[in-house]
Image 1 (spheres, helix red, strand yellow):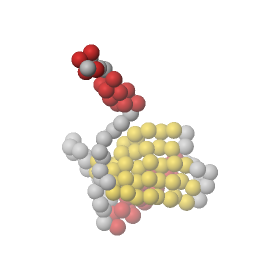
Image 2: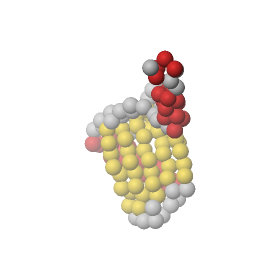
Image 3: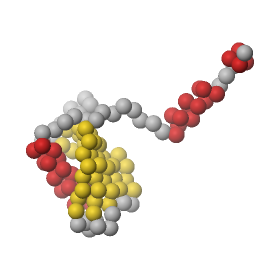
Image 4: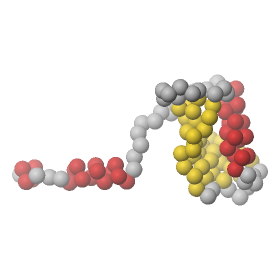
Length: 114
């Protein structure tokens, strides 16, 4: 695929997550995300696309992920197994979000109790 680049979102000793960006405009050009998990024999990928791709473009993208991210990690592997999903980003949640949400619910005034 043309104009694809990857922006690392996180990295651990045995996994990495990337945003998949297309083009170089300043607008939201995220195509999706990919999480890559390295095991002793295989590499597992979870590819989440924000829009559907033609089969040819999808296989090109998986090949590019393999070449640019998996093989460059220099981890031994027998196979690259990829699960592909199409969906949309509906939000980002963290412990901080839930702590703030719980504070909003538990902050009662004396008038609220009556």
